[in-house]
Image (cartoon, rainbow, N blue to C red; front, side, top):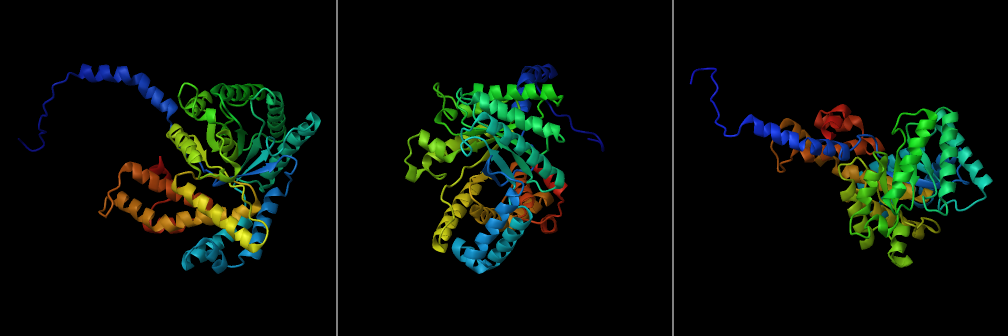
Amino acid sequence: MGQGQQERVATSLAGAVTEEIGASLAPVDAELERRYPGDPGTRQPVHTVYVPGDAFAADTLRTWGDRALAALDEHAPDAASFAAVLGLDGALAEDVYGRVRAKLEREPVEDLRVDFEDGYGRRPDAEEDETAARAARLIAEAYGDGTAAPYMGIRVKCMEAAVRDRGIRTLDIFLTGLMETGGLPDGLVLTLPKVTYPEQVTAMARLLDAFEEARGLAPGRIGFEIQIETSQSILATDGTATVARMIQAARGRATGLHYGTFDYSACLGVSAAHQASDHPAADHAKAVMQVAAAGTGVRLSDGSTNVLPVGPTEQVHDAWRLHYGLTRRALARAYYQGWDMHPGHLPTRYAAVFAFYREGFAQAAARLARYVDRAGGDVMDEPATAKALAGYLLRGLDCGALDAAEVARPTSLSRADLEGFAR
């Protein structure tokens, strides 16, 4: 064969066969793209803090940070004492402790939800009207003056008949208040609790359709989280996974699935003493949620612990160890977000998150660097793993566990490069 000539490769199928198969699968291609768009690539907060509507104030974020710092000052005033509680080794403990304190001073809460459901209860209509309007005003002011958390919003009452009208009115007052004071912030998050049927999700989506139309907003501008708190939300009467149908019922508006530890456990008859996020019933529910959400762009959040770090030092340390262990367990299972119920939970939330990313940083960076360079090593990674490695590093950067310069040194990758691999 002469130079520059290409060897002919024999085939048997006519081009029409390929065209026919492509045409037959075109609807499937479109369906895959619509239903499984992949992760949105935006920051996911490491936790959500719930504050009752009547307790929310302009200084709530700073107050939570100050109370968390005060808990450290009283019960773990230095890295060594904190490390002794959580079982961290020396060098890691110094780094984590310093980052925890800096985080509590700079950004104590990543995601705050003003609660108008269980944490608020039933109030006279005039009172809830006023509280919803005040929440909108305070959140708008916080975003305006730069004191807001990265994500803020409200949890309304559910779509069940007894409280449906009240929940709709509260949502309307809140969103209208934001629109009247500058518009919807980019970090706005809404939460719909106690969802049992996909039709309730459809109703929420329809409600947001109507609000967007009334205010001249782009269709689909407002998303919402779905709280998984009932057994029916996991398994329907026909044996199908209800939660998968709920995601589709949101018509692209679902942003997250949040596991409700105590409501879900109680729904299954788990006794109060054993209601926890590591109960087998919880693991089953979250595994179903995880599979249902995979590839859809809908993110997962674990629940909370109701064991509060209050009282004498020994009791606080016990609660910290529990919370730290549950958070590390969740992270290993790819639940990168959880709920925190008390300012005293913030030190161990951030300690667990920072330790998780710092412990795995060197190996993840080295593996990604080898993948980029196509170099050898003791692990042969594939594109899907490179995607996971980049996502891991990005999450570490977002929360403050890692710094851009230290990630760039071993990988030679910028944040934009990491985002490209993560996609």
